[in-house]
Length: 364
Ligand code: HEC
Ligand SMILES: [Cu+2]
Image (cartoon, rainbow, N blue to C red; front, side, top):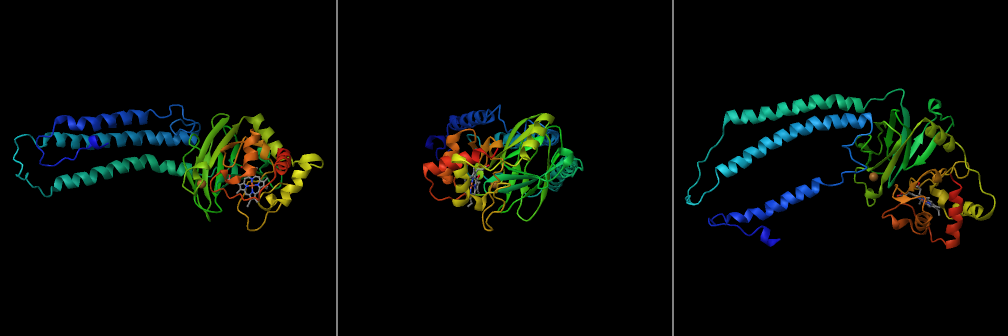
């Protein structure tokens, strides 16, 4: 690196012209490489997949052009000045340039102009702020909990969306919604500040303890839209991902129907032993299973409701594949494989892990 920035003295009049070429080339190459990142990124806010994300994109574009114009103008003046008034060979090294102080016209100009630019940006921005904080009456409502380091979703009884069960639907990490339907999220946190972010469906919304923020989502088409926590919240912040699964009408009806069926308690074999172990090993102290383990220990950390665990594809903040049995067994063997995980269990024998797995598998 040393040769990139050789020690340069102000007085070094004979500095060769080529000295600045290398850093310039490096910077240009880096700019090219960085702008080349991830053309098919699944989480790109620049590839909106619903009306709210499109609204934001529609704000981003004009603001970016305004910012680009300001950037080009300011940098242009700087670059122009640097070249025009640079020190030339033969200049008198000890002479001071003319010292100027104050220019009222310029100062008024560069105060008013940015204020006007910001006012222009505000004209675009303010209506969007209101649009994104509306609470449409015909929306599907979901309460979202951002907890260390996973997402919980509770759907209250809403017969117009097929949810008729008195205690609604509770699930984790995968947020299921109908496509082409406004969804109103009510965001809260039991611990620290998180941020709910599914970039193709809307921007980030802070999830703050002791407050309820609302946020809107809507997907144009059925599909899976990935997202993640957007606010540093602790060791496994980067492992606090999520998926939004948007269904067509038939898919939504199936999902709702499945989520309202209470799983049967296993009575024989490995799964029945797993069912017993679920209480004996303390799992039920933290995890709820509807119809079987309804109440958790008062001081337990917030933990995913496991009633329909196997209706999902991913677990533990959507970082592990639920269709891969090895991932789940590794999790039960050592939940600390996810750094900072708040799941604490004693050592389990391989037999116990098999039995617990057999029980968990019945939770579909
Ligand atoms: C001290 C509380 C606690 C205990 C006890 C506990 N867990 Fe957990 N469990 C958690 C928390 C918290 C998470 C979420 C971890 C994360 O994603 O960061 C979790 C996640 C899980 C998940 C993934 C769920 C999902 O949808 O992401 C499964 C499965 C699970 N635990 C099973 C068990 C089993 C089986 C036991 C008993 C052997 C157990 N847990 C004991 C707190 C606990
Ligand atoms: Cu978080």
